[in-house]
Image (cartoon, rainbow, N blue to C red; front, side, top):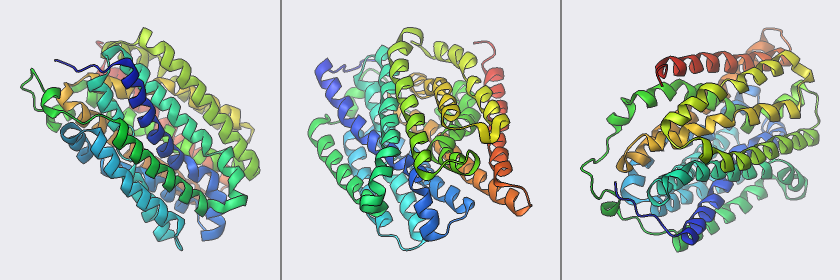
Length: 405
């Protein structure tokens, strides 16, 4: 199919603008891990409440993925990302003004809805405007930018918390999001739908995506492996360090900084090397077969260590999960240009529903363990065991479905 490849300087500008939006979305995704002690204290939240609140972002995010896919393919990233970010601003303002848990949760869901196109919008644009061999690198470096956002949600947020409070922090984030919208309007090209579908009769369909064998093989992994990774790195890593490892709130923020810095560096290196070793869907499958179980081995060791497992162990788990980042660009490359947006957002739907479900289930497991007379440490280990078991069988399903590849 004909592709309109943009000049290098314009491609870099587009990447930087979209990366800024994705940076903010990841900061918002991970910030509950840092401010959780304040929220628990102010609103008297249980572990289940905290899991539900953290998962509310993922629930809102997941709820719009399918419509976002259609909108991206027809209207383009410029309009869709901008419009949705306005919803995110509304959610941030509402979160900052919340007086009870219900408003907190609804605001968190609204934020998730608003940033629902912050990664899929850029990836759809890269599928159209960037050369095929640079898409894996662009994806990895977008994830690196996301890691910078998570990094900013740790020590920097912890630093400003006693100075301005968590409510003012959300006000500042709302202003930065408004700036992002202005940058998108000014720098991102308009979407030429006719040009993008030139030389093809394929109009793209959702049915084609969900019946694709490669896509189906990734469904459990997207839900449990990727969803479990999100659940740990964006919420439960912080409470694990406080409740299990015995860290103070400040030490936990330092630990989160270490975890997110490790992610940042791993995605930076991964973005450089992955285009050299993964240039097709087949390459991605081979790498996933080898690399996907590595984080499960690390997670097993963390569960075994229990209170002795701290920030560096959790950071190693996050870094060992880098192979999972192969899935998103591989899904994009597995379908025609006219279906790229729907394919990417369909897969993202799995990831974020999984993250919501796993994050909440871990909270329920912890509360249930305590109510049955077990310690919180046992509850946390049981929650991690849930991720380990479901992720292991999801990986086996992927192996069986791709046995001949």
